[in-house]
Length: 313
Image (cartoon, rainbow, N blue to C red):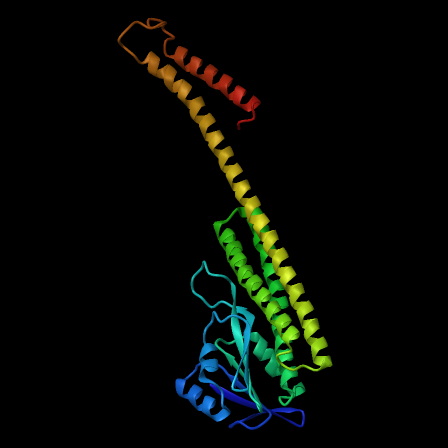
């Protein structure tokens, strides 16, 4: 689906055909004929539009036939039905700059473009560079918000895991760890993209816009540092829980082994007194039944006291 937006006297108006100085936003579902028609109408290389559909497209920029193509990654919730997949993934936002229009292509519904659309009355599509930088700003804000949500959920699952040692909580922590891997990779690529844009001045930014881009680089670096810190904390936590689980398992096995030894002694005494191939002590005594029982109890008590002294229980 293709949307055309124009700013008229501070108001966002959706129009039905492209004009100079507008914002063109492509959102799912996509049709091949729409790509072909838009590419011909706005003189956009069709490869730029098709590349936008690749969820694994890396952040980069490219110039072809005076059309600029910029890709940046943004976070979004993962709608997968697989319980082992990450809670959050990253998807590309593709920005295409023609001489008269700015075009954004979203392979999936994402919050950055929604926020940008909600504040569009403050934007000016004719100022393409600032429009791109504002999209970058919304992307960075999205990363910050998702990282805070991830940290909050991590704390919740850790607290629950301390109390119950549930496999479900461990699985959720693993899904958070996968989400952080996506975030760290995307933030590192976004940071490199912005630094290259600043160094090469690909967008022909003025001094004010370059300062704004530099601020975005700093914010992206901060988000990357947060993601790395959360990743290290989560990795350390999972390693600690793995050690705790292993230690608990060793303690359980030690207790079971001790109980097995304690129970095996009365069984051994009863087996010896149950033999009928030779004469055994107290065989003719009227208290013959109580002798092995007493001996079994004594041996069990002594061994139990010894294990308790060694803190095997």
